[in-house]
Image 1 (cartoon, rainbow, N blue to C red):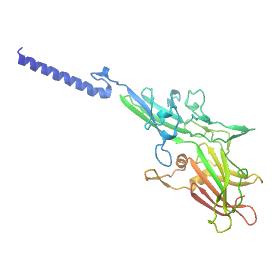
Image 2 (image 1 turned 135 degrees about the vertical axis):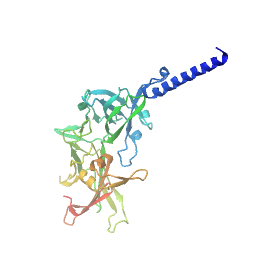
Image 3 (image 1 turned 180 degrees about the vertical axis):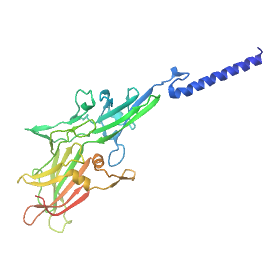
Image 4 (image 1 turned 120 degrees about the horizontal axis):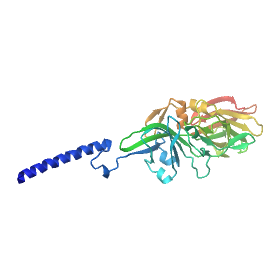
Length: 358
């Protein structure tokens, strides 16, 4: 073999080797049979991303509002627990784009997440100590008792729920399952304002809301439970100087305020906020909070970017809204008693002229 034929034959051999290597590398991207497979990681990697944009801003607030995550992975055919993952490091959860790695085999699973169970003050929501099946992943609100009456008078920590069925592919690379969250806790701020100068004090009224919503299933539906009487976690009263703003001589706008925390509100139920005058024991007013909140609301809302969104489903509205402000204006009747001049729910006015509050 002369020198020229030696170079030619080796060039052909080298080109053939490069072709084999390139083909192997191309196959490796999909099946991990790379010529240099021992130098790379050819396993699939799975992560769970949590998103909380089911709010009135349509903006993801997960990093600012969630302080813990408990994830349960379920075999959808048997309902058995496959894996459990936990994170309560605020530094990690508050990072934009937080991803939770999960060590699972390729396949189809149900992912159930309860977020916010950890609270720096009190753990008001809890899951069973032993969880082996889908039916065990239910969340219970703590409550106190007076005799047989259950009540709750704490400010509830924010509780979130998420659930999705997803398939993890048997392909190399990073695969992300996105779990959308719903906030289950609500704060109701109730304000009674007397426009005729009558002093209102913090011990004048008893405010309660009764509902059997303290037991939530793995799919976030309500499980049969005892009725809980939700009582204010904060009450205050006072007066605001309104001199010069009214035609009569009254100088003060007197108010009574109470804040109540409650668990998930459902569109097909009718919890009521009852206001009782302590001196007489009379029910001053009974407010159907779900009915009024869903009836007297807008159909369209702007997000943080001024995009218009339409809400036609009452349950979606209740799941997006977590703060309810109710203002009840009271005045005197000439023949005694009080009347409700108007009621505002989240700035929407309900006119009740000449209505007897009793």
